[in-house]
Length: 202
Image: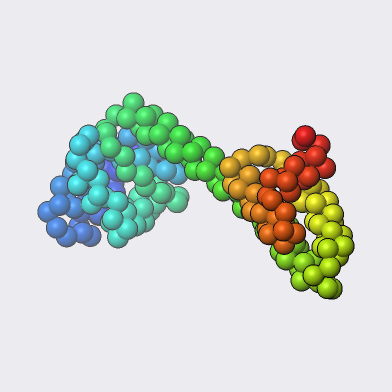
């Protein structure tokens, strides 16, 4: 496969012929072929010329460049436009992209953990509601006491299986404690003491 400069030299006249508008022409003429890596043609525009880069990133223009460059190269070519016109600018761009991906992955991992935590505690919360609804003669303290003991066990088991004690998990845990406190007419702090003892944390 040819190098970036050769492909761009062959591509540019056809693309110029296929677009309209002074801004797009100026952007194409200002573009500098920097690299060709694994089917990716990297074009740079002068630093600070965001408008030029914007013209080249327009879907219609980018698609025309990719189709024309693919014909010139004899294989599929994708195009990436960066700010800057040197190899060093491209390296900086790659580092920024890698950091952005790393941060996105970290955020996704955090969101997944929060969703798992929420789902786990929501299941416990719903079970508490169902078990309470199933009590016969709720007015009898002995029936509420049996429910209370079962519920303490349920929440403690969920607590022991909790892998992370992040803010979201703690809030959902507290929500379950408060629900049981409401059902059993027991202060939430007392419920928390019972659960944490059962879970081996006190």
